[in-house]
Amino acid sequence: MRVVKTIPDIRALRQKLNGTVGFVPTMGFLHEGHLALVKRAKVENPTVIVSIYVNPKQFGPKEDFGAYPRDLNRDLELLRRDGVDIVFVPSDDEMYPPEFSSWVDVERVTERLEGAIRPGHFRGVATVVAKLFNIIQPSRAYFGQKDAQQVAVIKRMVADLNMGTEVVVVPTVREGDGLAMSSRNIYLNPRERQAATILFKVLTLARQLRQSGEKDAEKIRRQMTSLIQEEPLAQIDYVSIAHAETLEELNSLDRPAVASLAVRIGKTRLIDNMPLE
Amino acid sequence: MRVVKTIPDIRALRQKLNGTVGFVPTMGFLHEGHLALVKRAKVENPTVIVSIYVNPKQFGPKEDFGAYPRDLNRDLELLRRDGVDIVFVPSDDEMYPPEFSSWVDVERVTERLEGAIRPGHFRGVATVVAKLFNIIQPSRAYFGQKDAQQVAVIKRMVADLNMGTEVVVVPTVREGDGLAMSSRNIYLNPRERQAATILFKVLTLARQLRQSGEKDAEKIRRQMTSLIQEEPLAQIDYVSIAHAETLEELNSLDRPAVASLAVRIGKTRLIDNMPLE
Image 1 (cartoon, each protein chain N blue to C red):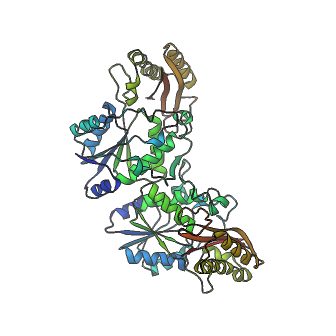
Image 2 (cartoon, each protein chain N blue to C red):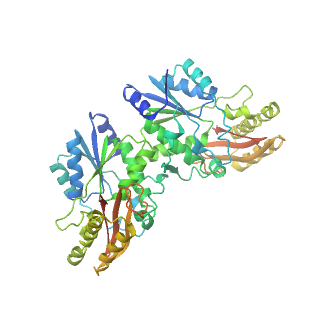
Image 3 (cartoon, rainbow over the protein chains, first blue to last red):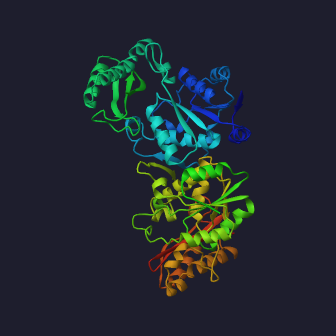
């Protein structure tokens, strides 16, 4: 496994590769969710490249950029074990030199949910993904369904800007009790960790309501909200039943829909979602 | 020469090409300035692709998108004569489908001069160039020095977003009396055509002042302004002595500088510029 730290070096390596390249962009502190992306990429491509980069531009000024968990040595060991070919670990200096001033702005789908609460977040995400795609030139890039809105934004960007990379979405990996894998779960104390299972319970309720024939989105949102309110440690940021591509809130479940929510458990903000079939 | 009208078709053709690809993006109605770009691309690359697309997103609502001159058959004849391999003529429907919502925004360098007077213009330019680069994947792309700020914006975008295309800038081609070649020159009546020579005269004055040792940018701007005011048909939009890369106005000519100006001759808006060495 090659660990590459500069853009010229990864470009030189990339040029020598034959066949398709599968790319998994990450912010490190890897968990089973990331490794599911890597495994899928391994199955589908002769070469797999993983990037580890905690992108400062997608954190707001009051968010957890400084505290975001990092453990490069452990990450590299996990990736080596899973047969990754190249790990790209760029520096802030090279990614964002002082004169940096170009951004990818995706409108509409970025304005709701996470985008409404975290202004500039998806600008940072879209921009860094565009940069990484241009550097790595992947045939396929792998993202987790866990970040459903991120997936919608990246798909929109790739289509609109005619990027030659296929976006592959991999189902959310969950702990035994349903908590979605997230690097931020490490922030939870044991009592909060227990309370955090409320997200999966609420999404499961939404899916059950849908499967039992409920078509009124507002009724489902109301029942989801009531159930979260039974958990004293949970504070709702949003509860959403939205169109899966545009993330516009739905009145009636007559199109592909996704239930999603953001909840604060103590000081930790967790998001999760579930497609409603 | 192949004329290709859809994105899937040009992608398929591109995949079969070996060696470097030189790309000349144009809005058609070609003149000697465009053909100088083509000739340079021919010298430097085994394959040359030209796009002809009047990009609606770079025109303001009150600008001349509808009136912008078009003559596809003549353009194709000129390109065939110059040995172009592929001409890409995309449709608005495919470039900007209804759900289109992603943009490339370059900050700072876009906020001055043309950007200040034509809000959204460089957003449209950067976005369409990013799209075309992603579709065509050129090794080198050729732009005219005539649009100096466009060149600065594209260079900034390519560097910031790590695009793998080299930007080649080709000197402005001028008529015998110094008027820079422009598709918009066709708007000028004979009296205006004569008056339009004022732009080149003013830029030549700026260069002469610089070469005779003048280092005070404001003094040069003032003399340029006075000279334009001697032409009754000319209305000044701006007169600028700016840093060549950032286009920030200079006080002292202690860095690479460019003199540029935008002038209205009757209803026709003309721009021109000259690097000051």
